[in-house]
Amino acid sequence: MHNTLTVIGQKFRLVGEIYSYQTITIGNINSTFKVTYRKPDETLKSYLFQKVNIHVFKNPVQIMENIDRVTTHIREKYPDQIALHFHHTDEGLNYFVHDNDSFWRVVNFVDSVTFNICDDIKVIESTGKAFGAFQTQLSDFESAQLYQTIPDFHNTKKRLDTLFAHIESNPCGRVREVKKEIEYIASVREKAAELSVRYANGEIPQRVTHNDTKCNNVLFDKKTKEPIVVIDLDTIMPGMSMYDFGDAVRFIANTAIEDEPDVSKVFFDTAKFRAFAKGFISETHKSLEPVEIENLVKATFSITIELASRFLDDYITGDNYFRCVYPKHNLVRTRCQLQLAKDIERKWDELEWIIKDIIENLEA
Ligand code: GN1
Ligand code: MG
Image 1 (cartoon, protein in one colour):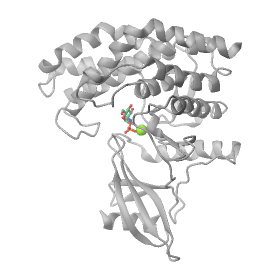
Image 2: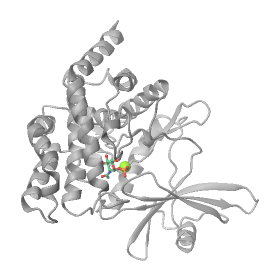
Image 3: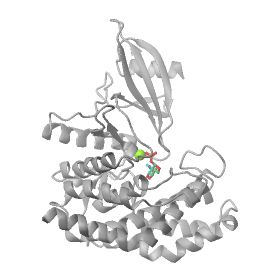
Image 4: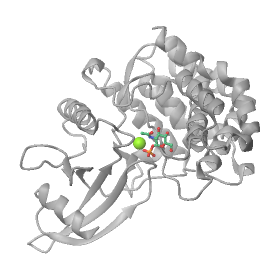
């Protein structure tokens, strides 16, 4: 790996030589390395080298173009804000294809902290603000300028249709094992797909959205615990605002990690939901339409079922998409999301009430 990283560093014209490197294990799709260079003046500087998963991202050049456009827009509008800095090759490209088969990019490492599980209510509220502000900052960005890098990424109806088609064809003989999971998903299929159908019909506004709003995609200042910058811009595409909200809370308000094998530890924490919602709504309420606010809870439920279906679909079809560390990893992830979805269903009325309360207090 050292040799490959050296070649990549040279291509991106980094100065000095590699002092150390480590693999970053966060992320289910791309491979990331933190690489530290010793510069000729003996000082150290760190970078993130990322190998983009070209099985998932069929058009990585389009991703880099999207990222370039979006970061330029934000940088020009908010010059004082910390922005992600991608390096360029001699050819002026922000990516490099190595040996014709691997796609690399290099970004400055930002000294910061991220959270996989967050118990600090203040940090949760600021995560909501960070993702809300991100959407608002891009509200005047023409979404037609963006490539659909993964078409129908959050089209819940299509995701569910695909799952049920694969249940029919049962390519790896694993369906027998997951009857209960299938039964539950079938029972909520229509409810979970509803918003995506309404979006496709034009009843829900199309916005520029992040589409992967896990809290570990926000970098925080180590001391102040204030958000510094939103990262992982791979899936920026037109989408539903409320799905960004839902994706974020299904992660941050989960009392357990996303692949907790003991589902009795999995609950949807309403206090965390409130904190995130307060932050998110305070940044977005002026630009959101009533239909978008009214469906925040349904969006949370829908995207949780969607992700469960994606994990289950990957399990049924042989684990080709998400990185798996052990054989039933995708099944564990599926069960976790389903447990969470059931708890969201149980708490639905309380969650609606929390949103109402936040809105009323904003207007007061
Ligand atoms: C993937 O690799 P990561 O963590 O950035 C996935 C998201 C899922 C997430 C679940 C391109 O994101 O959609 O919500 O795993 N990204 C893609 O942890 O499929
Ligand atoms: Mg991602």
